[in-house]
Amino acid sequence: MAKLLFLPGAGARADFWQPAAVGLLPGRERHFFAWPGLGDEPPRNGVSSLDDVVAMVLEEMQGPVDLIAQSMGGLIAIKVALAEPGLVRRLVLAGTSAGLPVEALGGGEWRETYRLQFPNAAPWITQIREDLSSRLHLITAPTLLLWGDRDVVSPLPVGNRLLEVLPNASLRIIAGGAHDFAITHASEVTPLIAGHLE
Image (cartoon, rainbow, N blue to C red):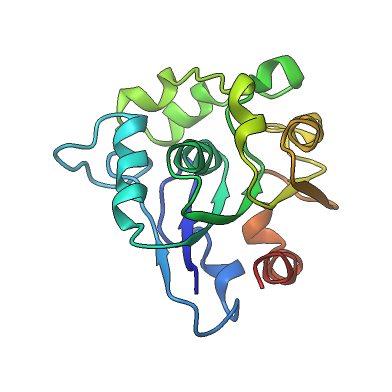
């Protein structure tokens, strides 16, 4: 049975997905990641880039996994799925760039606000400018796209674009959801995730 791996965004907290994970597919093994050096998380030797956190996820994978990812976590999930397509059974991507240039799709500038909120976060987080658009069609794992209709960081046009380019994707819109809808609308998000991962 595929292990559940929960990937937060740049806020980096392991408990980000906890509200949506309560009661989600009991009995399935799970792991909640935190990203060293980001948000308020303490740094760790050997973790100083996006590729280093991707390596953290790859190291946790000893067999098939389902990836549940938000915001920057979605970019990490995409890179993991491209690196190990045979081990990623299903994807859940919530309010993420997933490797698209979100600014071109109306995405808001988040870096200055992030720096004010987390002044001690590692510099690399606000330097990421990866565009994986040309490779997204290679991801064939069934993918659930969850989007808040009030998300200004990764607005709905991003989700719509991912729906076009990912060959096995579906999109569900969370009414009234901002960028943190996985927390604020957890009771709505949980059954959608459960239905996709069963």
